[in-house]
Image (tube, rainbow, N blue to C red; front, side, top):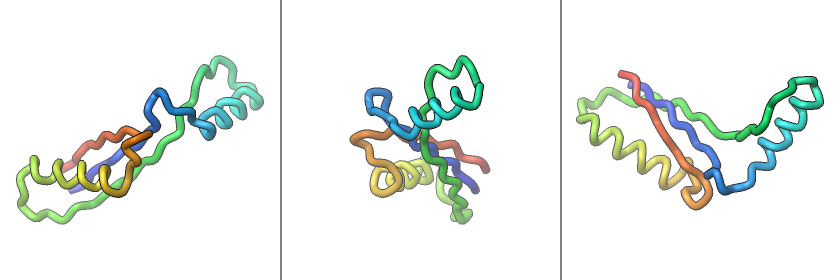
Length: 82
């Protein structure tokens, strides 16, 4: 089983990396780029332990809350592929 976890800054948090990318895209001639937000993507492969989906989702939330995301300034989401 595989999970894809996406971490992004909350909308109210300044994203200097995103702004730098936006500026670079404009400099390279890509017009119309109004905003860029940078984030992190994790692909996690989980052993098939026979756990119910709710337990797997609980573990993914804990991974995000305890290590992968700073929940004060970041949000997270995930998808699970079976």
